[in-house]
Image 1 (cartoon, rainbow, N blue to C red):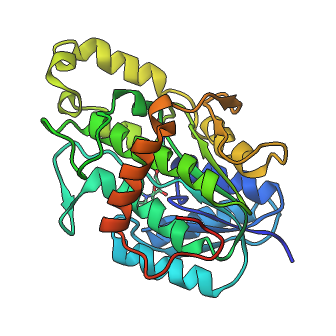
Image 2 (tube, rainbow, N blue to C red):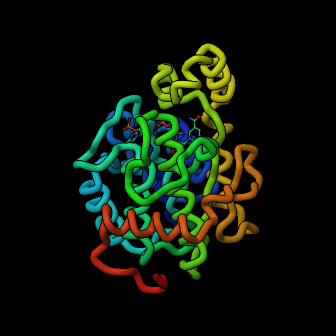
Length: 288
Ligand SMILES: NC(=O)c1ccc[n+]([C@@H]2O[C@H](COP(=O)([O-])OP(=O)(O)OC[C@H]3O[C@@H](n4cnc5c(N)ncnc54)[C@H](OP(=O)(O)O)[C@@H]3O)[C@@H](O)[C@H]2O)c1
């Protein structure tokens, strides 16, 4: 039987290109997304490459209830070789989803919960998609929301930092699988077309420099999604990579961000995750 891979948020953008790359590598890929029409198109594009048949499963990964239902369904299906948590989103306005700040839900709690639900069946690798935006994050994780004003880009970066800390933490605890992060670098996608267009996503001092900041964003996100997807594909498929490796935008290992390696940050993130996306049990083989 062909090895199985799940790629979230894979009906477009970097996720779709990652799914194509895994299909080319011999995986039977499950594409997760919200929109059935986009799902059908994605499956058709993957299947046209002639590999193992792909399939689409609909799930809104901004809903932890939907993530839970998806995780339980996939776990019931049995062994899964690779999970790529590609979902991510930036919110221009301070938004809550079921009472929890939206950036934290979509960029951290959602992939955290899906991973934890699937750990009992994952056989080979988890890849969490991170971002260079982690460098602008406030490095405090006492609460879901950091102190100070809401700026979408910075809060997105902080949620990605939480997820990177979780990734490196899990890499030390999950001894039978590889847990890696992949930073695709900038790419021209729906996300960058939409959210990087308004000065309110950055803190006031940067707004004063908005024309320069915007040009920098536009330049940094001009690469095709297929190029950016090489980081996740490498993280998922290169047999020489060890758990805890972070693959950078050039699809090569990079030094993990220092804050994400800090055990106090990892513990704080673990506490927030367990509080806001509780599991019913601790999966076998994982030390807490
Ligand atoms: N683009 C960049 O420059 C860049 C840079 C660094 C890191 N990243 C990270 O790379 C990953 C992919 O980014 P991208 O730019 O390709 O994003 P994107 O353009 O927003 O991705 C679009 C895909 O995400 C799906 N999606 C969005 N919200 C979803 C939800 N709530 N539930 C399920 N599916 C959802 C869409 O599916 P439907 O339309 O079917 O819902 C579509 O398949 C993200 O984690 C992002 O943070 C991106």
